[in-house]
Image 1: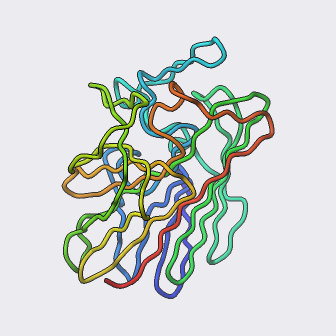
Image 2: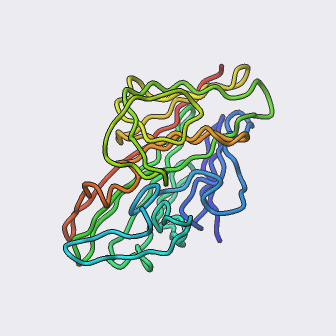
Length: 263
């Protein structure tokens, strides 16, 4: 599938229309993302639309009707459908890429999504918009970036994140809806109440700050080779807890920003 590059004097981003993902982000010539994986959900930074994280057992009830989705990560359906679809370029410049996709099977509610990527000298802004089609629908927006633990210079990554609460999960890692204490890492958890934006530092190389208009953050620190810091609009399985609804023609917007400086 086509890939497109945007850049500044110090940074370069590669956007892949296959999944609408940020496939590469090089800062000062150093790649900070995991650029390959055994499945589409294991690399780059991909959008999670129209749901984020685990949809428990691939199902939810919507106005009295049950909907079932393929179990992409048994026993659950993970990360929506947009990362498995072909996005289309509809506008670009040397620093900006705009993509669009119709939300299709196995999503049956219709609607479409857009993403906008804009790079400057020390920042990458990623914006997303979902608009409902003929039918009212539940919706979430999020991103799932995979950051390298080790760059080609400097020391291994150090993550600074300071949440006040963590979502309690059941034996299948599905949030129950209740909040509890944070606990020590390693983490594979959804957090809220961050006191400040998360920061990843590769000592001797870079410091990266991750900001978002979204207020839920899934942090995954179990892999040896990567860190995942994922802004999203609600907890995993939100469709079965307290789904956000948009009516026909209504839009839901979100953004994520990476800002960097030398460390």
